[in-house]
Image: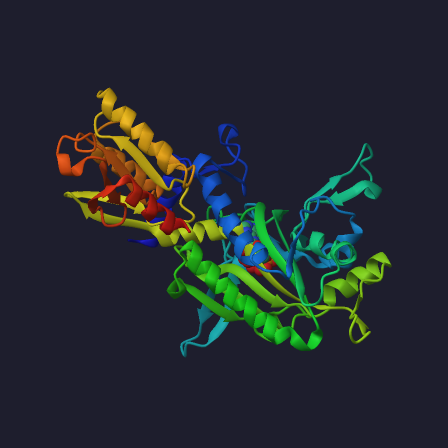
Length: 456
Ligand code: ATP
């Protein structure tokens, strides 16, 4: 399938089936914002829950925080965001459009030997050459005011990343829980970036969600910790159904890394619009805690009880965008095949993150005895997981297709055999598998076991 077409199909499915809607849509939208709908919100929660489980809760060395989005502006002065969190901006003198200068196409003029003699930037909006002005730096932090005054002294920022709230709470976590190094702090939350050109659905947003860890280590052990988190990120990709074949590690060369980072890997994913950054993993030395110690005047060193050594811990940062993860999952799982002579589309979601785990349905909705039995089966299965849906609309084939499209791994159908019409089939149901469309006859207890093992 052509990439553009795949992207259109994903966006349309998301809207039609209630995964993701354009933000403020009834007012014509707001660029760079999207809203998660009834199914999308559950998908997102499932992804986040899995991340919490793998990155925080299953480990003795991890702690959580949920910091405020609004922080003392000095946090962002110390971190370097006020001075340097910017993208290069150019404005077109002709159409007045504004663009990121590194996203602008360039047209090359060559001489008869093929040597480039001239290069001209082309305006991505009006298509004119040579109309783009000087590059200037545009700070991407959203500014607002705290309280009833609107002067400079009341300026606060919407956080551009969740990491700031973690560093600012390093001392609180150490003082309250006394963790031994190495240990980390994990947080999920919203971040805001005034992107010059939001684009590609939920890939480049102005309001986004991040799942971040700051993992504090003794300086001489950073390489081992870096490797551990690199592996953890691959395991997480696998768990949410992002195939390793579509995930690429890009070692960011020294000249492109932040000056304090000794190693950075961009985890890139093959999106329909190109290979782009999905997540990042960086060794940030002691830059952040040192900067916040200096900025706040509060000592942020750590005392090693055994060696009595006092030092600022170094940090490894696995940083994962939730929205880019959701888009990578949708891209990886969208499939089309031929079923019964018709094109069928489905989402091959990992059962763990699928918003609906199974759908239960009576073969005919006008037979009260079938409906009653199906309701009983549904209740039984809901003991395993509450997300067991009910559908008795239209014919059974249509019900299956609807569930395929939203990625429901199993459908369970109750018919007259379940009620005893064929004696040796009494209390058995049809279990239908999403990906293959295959059906088997099982007892309710066997179905329960299948569902349980698929999501455990
Ligand atoms: P890019 O180079 O694509 O702008 P970045 O390098 O600025 O991304 P980071 O600052 O490393 O991104 O942010 C950490 C993670 O947050 C990214 O790996 C990505 O998953 C997510 N992220 C960053 N910017 C956006 C955005 N505008 N919309 C959605 N997710 C984002």
